[in-house]
Structure formats: structure tokens, C-alpha cells
Length: 425
Image 1: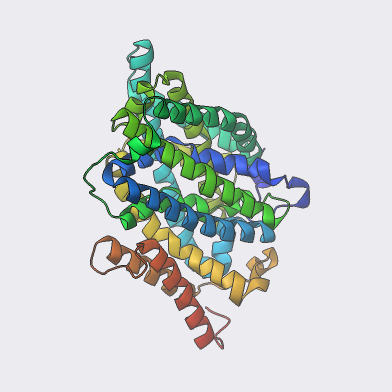
Image 2 (image 1 turned 120 degrees about the vertical axis):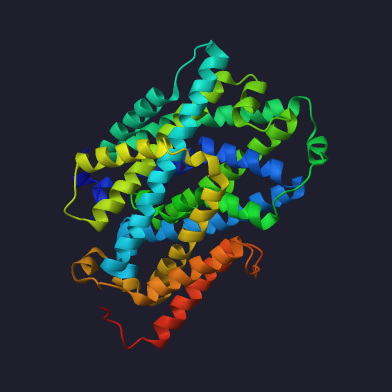
């Protein structure tokens, strides 16, 4: 399937719509991916057990609300997240926001290939006794993920639908293994020193998935009814993602291991570990690259086709060589800081301000720059950054929540105050 049929600059047509469970399979695969296991394990070892569980539930609720809101807007309008950003921020404002999304998604592409190669080389050595250098794996994996993306949404959809049940079985096996020699009460009673607060934990949960929740319209625009988009968000973030985070923490407690591959190998899941590494990374990175291509094509409509995908895939492989993984949790927090306020602006604009503007025809005579949207986003991001650095305290205990609410309220206030300047330059 060529990118001309991926609706990067137009609404999805009725003949391309599918049932919501098929779209949910893609969102669920993101929750099964290795970074979620890694983040879950790191969080467990950095928080008390009660704080860990609290952070999981609160973070999952936030993600579900943001994902359901953004996903349903995508399903109603049939537009990608980048076209929604163009309507809310104006063509020039959106160029900056969308390119920031593209950079972060390429960063994620690099993180996942980095994780993939590290895990594959380690597993090859431990399971089969074969020593393989990481760089050929990174290049091969990047090429495989890029080729999948060239074939578009349908290919990613088929892949996710086939692989999701396999990863569900591996996760269940991990939980069963964890409870074989430990009762839930015994695991809850394990004492350890906390190095993070509940707010830090929530930010890590939200940061790990937030980009996916905000760009959920990229896949929910293919859902037949907007209520299906809410189902997609619920099953991905409130059910599967929460279970995977918890499974990683519980398995870490039961095994006493701090590295995700050590945990999987401890429970004899060598092949299961390969399944999580290969299947999860393949779907997640194909989706990352797919969204990056949509972002670039929405920002630069003249750039189209397979070449854009190939170039961005190559950049993603290059990002893998930068070892972004070394500061993984910091990277997640940064993403949460930057992107949550975008959802606040778009949701407010669509729900309360200018619902009629969210249509493809608007883009032909779109505003060039919405200073209200950009100021609201910048204020929300700045507040979250200050809270993250400890410069100011969080009113709600979670910096990302403060930031999304500030951006939404500020956008409301500016829109009502300057309602007479509707046509912006």
C-alpha cells in the first residue's frame, strides 16, 4: 500500500473503516512492548509497593482519559493527529509541534532498536550460546520495521492482530511463574528503599505511553464509530498496559532481578523473551515510523511516498547508535512534559471552542499561526518542566496533570478574551 492511500492530508474514507478490536490490537501491542516491561521493572525497584501500585492506577487513568479523548476526536473527524494539530495551532504553529513529535518518535524508534539489539544479543548468548555484535541486528531490525511501514496501516494491523495473543500468553506465563513460590501478600510485604515519589512514578507511566495516547487518532481514525475509539483507549491503557506494568513489577519482586531479561530468563522464558523483544519492537517501531511519516507529510505536503519512509527509518537506526537508552526514564519524563499540553489545547478547541473547524475543508483556508494555542502549550510545558525540576510544587501531585489542565484553561481564557480576533495571522 502506498502512502498516497494513508490519508496523510485527508480524512479516511468510509471504505477503509474497520471494527474497533482490530485497531485495539495495535494499541495493545504498544503496551506489550519491551519499554513498558523495562519501565515497570525500574519503577518497582524505585518505589514502595503501595506507591508503585498507586502510580500504576493513577497513570493508567490519566492515559485512558487522554487517549479516549484524542482517539474519539480522531474517529469523529477521520483526521490524523497531525492534521488536528494543524487546525488547532495553524499551519506555521503546527509545523513546530509536528516536527517536535517527529523528532520524539524517531527518538523512540532509536530507543526501541537499541533495546531490541541489546536484548537479542544477550538472549542469543544465553539461550543458544551464540555471540552476535549489536550493529548488524540494529540495521536488520530497522530495515524490517521500515519495510513494514512502507505497506501502511493495513500491514501493521495484520501484524499486530497475529502477534498480540502470543505476547498475552507470555505475560500470563510471567505472572504464573511469579506466584508459584510467592503469595501476593508476601510480594506486597517486601521492603525496599524508595528513590522516587508517587508523582515521579505516575510521570514515568504517563511518559512511557503519552505520545501514543496523543497520536491515537492516527489509528482510531480508521474505527467505524467514535465509541470504538474509547474502547481502544480503555483496553490498551486501563487493562493491558496496567497489567504489563504490574507483571513486570511482580516478576521483579519474585525474582529479585533488576534487569528485564534476567527476570524473563529466571522464569525459563527464553523463547518468550524473544517473542516480547521481536514482536513488541516490530509493531511498536513500525507504528512509530508510520506516525513520523504522517507528521512529516502533514507538515510538508509535497514530500510523499516510500522515500520519506526510508529516509526516516535510516534516521531512526542512526538514533539507535546514540544510546538514548542510557537516560531512559529522563527521556520519558521529557516526553510527558512536552506533549501532554498539546492534548489539552486540541481537546479544548474541539470540545468547547471550534468543533465545526475540525474538517478537511478547513485545511484549505487554515489559519497560519494560532498564538493562543502556542502560548497555552508553552505555558503547560513550562509548568511541567518546573515541577519536574523541583522548582515549583505540583498542585495535583502529578506535574503532567497540572500542565494539561493549565494549557486547557489558558486556551479557554485566551479564546474567550480575544474572541474578536478569530482570523489569526
